[in-house]
Image 1 (cartoon, rainbow, N blue to C red):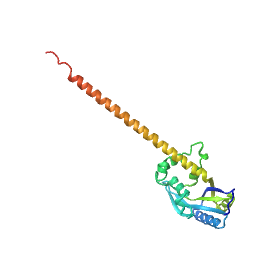
Image 2 (tube, one colour):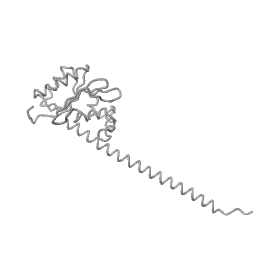
Image 3 (cartoon, rainbow, N blue to C red):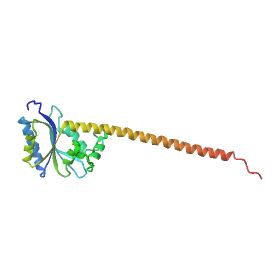
Length: 213
């Protein structure tokens, strides 16, 4: 694919009514890449279980960049969307999932990660891809042939939100540790104070004058 200042690097998420269409969609993307109409960096067909776990059914990656889809940004997204909490980003996945699934949040549509997450529906196959496009119409037309619903967000938005979530998670962990330390110290002081009061009472009792006969 020729270099062009109008090229944009995007994360494309495509959902389908027919799960088999997701595999055909992956083949279409590979064909578009071979024709030089898009640059396919990585892509994976995934399915979300009812327990939230995301399983990779098929994948393709650019050997010069990520090796496989699960080794790059697509793999990071898969881990955030449904992987074991804490394996990626040092625990930030828990924070991300908590915010992604709070669908009552008024500004949910402003979140790229939230939009991606909502597109990966439980019990259905979804295509996740990182592509460089001259025009979105190329991929959109190919997915339309398979009755796919396309969500597209710039890579920089996805990366910015992941980085922000990691920072927020780190700040939250620091604050949590501070609260635990403060609570521990307070408990220590309270226990020490109670012990001293107990000793003072005992000393006072021991030095109390004996009653006269």
